[in-house]
Length: 536
Picture 1 (spheres, rainbow, N blue to C red):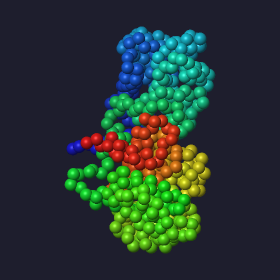
Picture 2: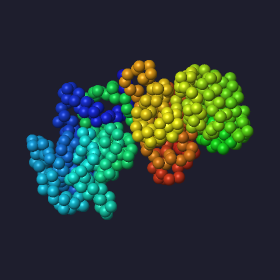
Picture 3: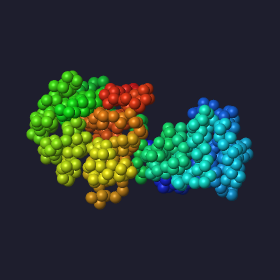
Picture 4: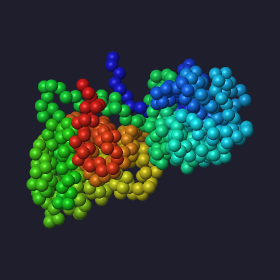
């Protein structure tokens, strides 16, 4: 039987400890995991450097298993010909077999905890080509004090010199909280962080994520599937997304890929409607109908030659009139999905239209994506989540999420994962909380119904400032709406849409940098993103 690709689990410190304990019960010892971890880190360093023999490496060693992993890595680097110095920054256990082995393999030991020779430490650092931070792992993070803090400040100062070594963090940059992403101001900015076994939640949360560098996850030999069913936070992977995208059979036709209705636009926001519709085409929808206010129609039609157009009644300000909901409801069965909100504008009329369309006149099908001004209108509809007759997905940015929930934007951002999870359960709808590491939460569990446990949340692996520009959210609306129309369930459609959108932006910013990325360019890059995930 073929095993489908899976997303990568993301764990808290307590969950990682439980996994290691379960591993021990299943016959894979902690010592074996440490040996595997140290080797994996050393091999990663060798790949990044391109060579090892003759390389000067400094391993910063702390008190526990993280330090032991670093000593194992030091041994392998020494075996491969590197000149390795292990700097002990805290007291090590009285019986320390990893330290004994390091000495036997010829690793130089600088015990700063005992002699405090910072002059020698700074001299060694100034000549090294590789620094591995193996001081504190998931057991302790911040605040940093004394010798550890002083040593890390010296590491950060290397970035200001002419000779900048490769800086790697083993599992976590020291000073970064494994669960929350809170970080000490002395934590250096790493070139890469090697997450052992599974990435820790704090590596994908700000402000700590700014110190992580490239995030690489390496296996350490945990038994297959050990304890993972209870872990509900995942990192989206290209393998999983590629395996879920709708197939494109040779005998297909436009009806194979669904018909999406995009309800969007107003006199002041014509571009939002065009971007959503264009992105829907570019991400594979067979047919796209754009419903816009009557005065917007000729402008949109001049830019969208492949789109079917549905002019709607409008008010005196060029926004959709509430009566338009009746016209759409009559033809709703023609469509496989609907995306509502981009550029509708905000007014009492728009609010009445959205309420009538989504909560009063709507039948259970098709599934609906609500974004932007659709969300702002929903927030004014009392108990809207209890009145929605069918499947729905919401795509708020943090400000819109604050409006919907009554929280402040800062409160939303403080714990993005649990905010998305909690409100997806309350509203019984998929919630896409946009931003760096966009969180997609499923509505599987409802505290109001007495359900216990947690619904799943999937994180996008992208934190791209290039997407911080007008219109990129409208493109995401089109992508997710397109996947809904192609038959994907809302949770998978939102997850895959978020990944495709992020990857399309990455393809552009890798070539040109973050400044000046246009939403229309993201839409045009979507076929490249799909191609990269399913090259056959």
